Length: 402
Ligand SMILES: [Fe+2]
Image (cartoon, rainbow, N blue to C red; front, top):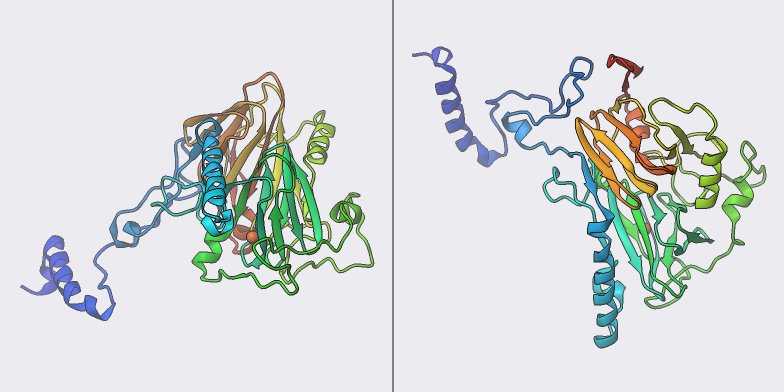
């Protein structure tokens, strides 16, 4: 019988036998369909629609983030426990926390990503604690990073000579290619969430870190001396629509990054409060973006940062995007429905809405809810793949960005 007359299963078996032989040359004889991992974007509009893993060789090697919710009540106490272990190691073994584990933190692991240290295909999140006196030495790297301060005292981060002293709700940005160091010079522990585009840089094999800051102080407490008066970001860029004419808006050696490193939680909340009387967006409520004031673009070339206010009882309409959305709950309590599943959140909870999933938010409390979010939308825009859909009140899917 000629090969082309073999029934499909026999043909596949013959190909697999051949594959065993050919494998040593690092080639694969195609025996299965190369099925994409996402359903057709515009046709599959059910609320429960979400990505699926395709069968076959290509599908088997794909991994896919799933919606997930990390409850602060379940995870927060691990910071106290690792901080205690680090304190004990410092006391009994003369081992500094930096030598002990580089950082005192836990990383969030999306259950769909096979143990990888990431919450979505492009985003990593760690939650860190710094005891009084702890320092993370000065360094720079290719990933863009941010920290969202969760404790009342947020310690400091010094970036390109600007020392940012933080409190709860602050957003501190360390764009790629900026020298930065962190520390806690207060009397109580400091907790924040670090968010980075680390998995993207790792995938591109473009991940590097430089720890040799010229002229850094010696030893484990290596830190850069502040060279700018406190409040530099706000002083130069804090008035909307006004930028200084006498400085370069490029800080550090990165590209397409914001010159503003520090947003105060109180200023973010005031901006949201000032808009609370507006109609807002049916899909996002009262939502504000953090942008590069010199260009109006996202603060990082890869990630977009936003904050949104949901008024008591407010429920947004369903929306979905080709971009991932990652959230931290700064205030209030409510729910987010993701691909037909309901996640009830409270203060400091963290959750992820992977791309292509329908989502909507509901403030179920009697006071305002405030969510901070991070999205890889700018990256998707740049590669021509950003699209978004919404649902009208009668459930019809409409194109928001097509
Ligand atoms: Fe860093």
